[in-house]
Every structure is written in C-alpha cells, then in structure tokens.
Length: 302
Image 1: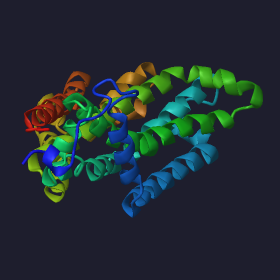
Image 2: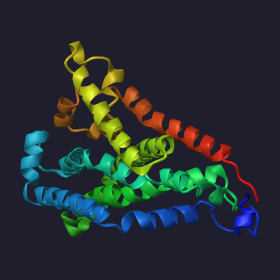
Image 3: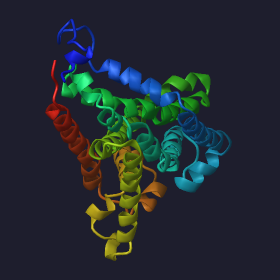
C-alpha cells in the first residue's frame, strides 16, 4: 500500500519551500522535550548547581584565588577567578549532561522507526540530511538552555560584581574564556547528542536506547577508571573512552594559559587533548553516517 493511498501527498511547494526544511523538526522536537516534568527536574538541578557557584563566587573570591591560583586579587587574577569557577561548574555538571542528552534524544529516531513515521518525513520536502540536522539540533538546543546558558550567566554575574566603570573592560578580558565556553559546549553537545541518536537508530526502541546510551557513558568511564591502575595511567586511548573526562580536557586545552594550576593537577591522569578531540568527534561521524544511511534506505512511495 502506498503512502498516497493512505491519504498523504507530496509537498505542494516541492523542495523549494521557504525557510530551513529541518526547522519544523527542531521546533516540534524541542517543544516536546522541554514540556515534561523530567526536563523541569533536570533544569532545577542545573539551577541549584549554578546558584551554588554564584554564591561561591560572591562570598569567597579571595579564598578561591589563594587556594587555587596562589595569587592576590587584581585584574589578571580576577579573570583567572572567572575561569576557575566556570571550570569547576563544568566538572560539577559532568554527570548530569550525558543523562539529559540521552533522556532527550533516546526516542527521537527510535519512535519514528517504531511508528513508521520516518517515511512520512521523507515524502514531504525533507531530505535525509534535513532529517539528521533537525533531530541532532533538538538535544543540542536543550543543552544550550541547560549548560551554555548557565556558563554564560556565570561570566556575566562575575562582571556585575565589578565596579561599574570596570564592567566592560572586564568582559573584554573574558573573550578568550567565552570562546573556550562556546567551543567546548558545541563539541560536547554535538558529541553527546550523537551518542544518543546513534543508539536510538540502532535499537529502534526508546527504553533500550535509553539504557544503552547510559551504558556507553558509564562503561566508558569504568574502562577509563580501570586504565588508571595501569603504569603511567594506561594508554591515553583507553582514558579517552570517558567522554565526560574528554570534555574537561578540551575545556582546559581551549583555556590555554588561563587553565588553573589546580585543574592541571587534577587532570594528569586524563587523556591527551588529541585523543579527547578524536573521541568526541567519533560519535558525531558515526551517528551522521548511520542516521543518513537509515533515512536514505527507507522506502518512500507516493
């Protein structure tokens, strides 16, 4: 039975309709992702952690500087203070971000496969690439709200603590930090989302995808932890299996000279930056290939 016989027809505007063709997929998926109680609970947890770091930054700036940098408060040290607090915020939410990405994205493709809705997308003016982009951006958008927003707020909050005539110069000094935040978030969001979309496509069911996606993150962390017992921390490739650790390495690498010495001490057993970048990029490539292949081989009749 063809799709046309069920009452569907091709898009009247063909493939030349106005606006990005993946935008309706993103808008609908994002709306469904953020309307549930589970997402609000995740948001509450991120907010609590953000408030804690803001209070830490407000009440204990001198203690933070002395404990982690060994420097007194001045213009350069104040900039280093912001980098230190944002670094520890990234570490504090490292266990929550994968859970949120898997929770949001585990059913995005699995449900389309289960309900046979994928052909209905492709019979419209939507290509497999449009489908991939729309689905990929749904968890990325949720991580922008839950991760990128709080990180940028931390920098803005620290700027508001400065004297009024120093706010703009202070923000100007934070441009390298803002670049590190944006770069790390983008790579993390795409990588975590890709893991979830990959298992969603392979399993074809939401619950198995949810379990398998969580197992990927937990299993990688376990293998990475076992490698620490090896001489010199084991091969860097094994340590890079922990994607959350890779994010910390990437953030510190992008910070460059602003990376706090305390953070360096804590990341000696973590993978090298090269392995961290490679392991975060790998799921993006795999998920793109699998999803595009699955969408390209679906039978669409009209």
